[in-house]
Image (cartoon, each protein chain N blue to C red):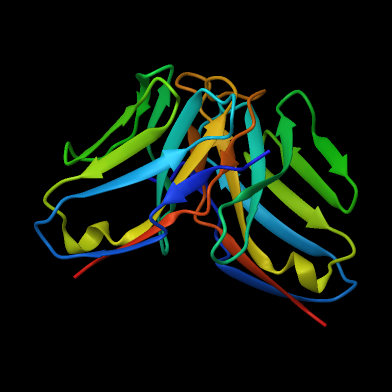
Length: 112
Length: 115
């Protein structure tokens, strides 16, 4: 049973526009979330995180929003650049075991 | 500072064989976690080692095992390989045990193909 879900396997966006990647989770006990970016032939790299005490965290062009009541988080990239084309994974840390639980990923393609 | 290194990068095995993958964490990092990535399944957690002890284990059969050495290097072993074991195996290291304040740094992965 997938506890962290990314329902959109792929997304295409024009350069300069906003990219919105979505992630849903099922366990209301999850209290820390992360986004990773993965290029082909490389391991995932950490992008941005958010704790459940916040509903927004910003880092440059990247902003993560957390809606605890909906058990939903989203990653906004503004403006999108061709170099942002990658697979994006969201992850939650299980507070009981500290395991990282990853979603299935969304492939973002930014069109020049 | 060198990143996480994994060897080999690519591996082809046949069903029934066994395989050992190696991960060298970032210098000073004591925690190593292993993940399996397959299309449509995302990253599935295999296990985490911290200070040579298995701290966490995912839902994988006993054919998957691992260990960590005193220098924090880790190996994972898969015995009696099955076709479904074909995947990218990723290793991640962090300074301390996994948790919110201990960022995980991933290696490039080992692509295992089972024929």
